Each structure stands twice: as structure tokens, then as C-alpha cells.
Image 1 (tube, one colour):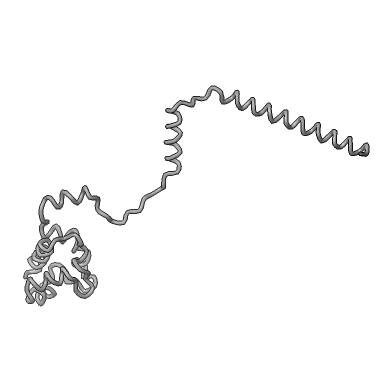
Image 2: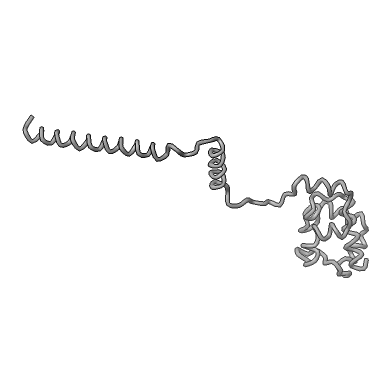
Length: 159
């Protein structure tokens, strides 16, 4: 081995030794600095709650489902009145005439429909007709509630 190689090897080992000593010093200083920190189960629980808060989704998607707890009292109370069903489910189309729906209060539009009889109107409401889907927008309505809504719309239209 040449003299230059020995000098290089000596310098390399010296620098490496100094770096190892510095790493050990940092390790022991970090250990001393964190020695008094509280590591009780309470602090771990607080840290876990903070982590869960940080990774919690920003928002939630509501697809329009009704909670079971909200639906149960309505079902237990009995059938809803015609105006309640109309305001909850029929208003969107029958107040604006959307997709050819007869407007509430329009006797001329409701007259020919009323002439067909309640059974035909109820059948159309249950099964759907033209652009109106089955049971309109009230999939949870009973036949009795649909009939009450039809009677309400007919009465408001002078039929």
C-alpha cells in the first residue's frame, strides 16, 4: 500500500470515528431531553384522539336516507294526512307542473283525471304513469296515504 493510500485510509477512519461519536452524542442528548415526558395511558389516549381528529374525513355524503329512529315514530303515529303527504312528496312536481304533472288548483287539468274515478287515479299513483314513477317520490307511502294525497289535490282543484 502506498503512502498516499495510508494517509487517505487514516483520514477516512478518523472522519468516520468523529461522525460516530457525534451520532452517539445526539442519541444521548435526545434521550435526556425526552426522559421526563409523560407516557401514561392517559397521554397515549389523548395522542390517539388527536390522531383520529387529524385523519377524520372533512365531510360526509348524505344520500337522503331516513334514519330508522326517525321513520319509526312516523309509522307508529298512523297514516299521514293528504296535505302532509303532498307537502313532503308531491309538491315538487304538482306545484310546478314538471313533466306534465297537473298543478294543484288547476281544475281544468284535474277534471278529466277525476272523471276516471278514484280507483284509476290511485292505480296510476301506485304504478306510475307517463313521467311519474311508481308511488311518485314517496316510495314509503302506503296506498292509504297516496289516496289521501290524491283526495287532497282533487279538493284543492275544485273536484
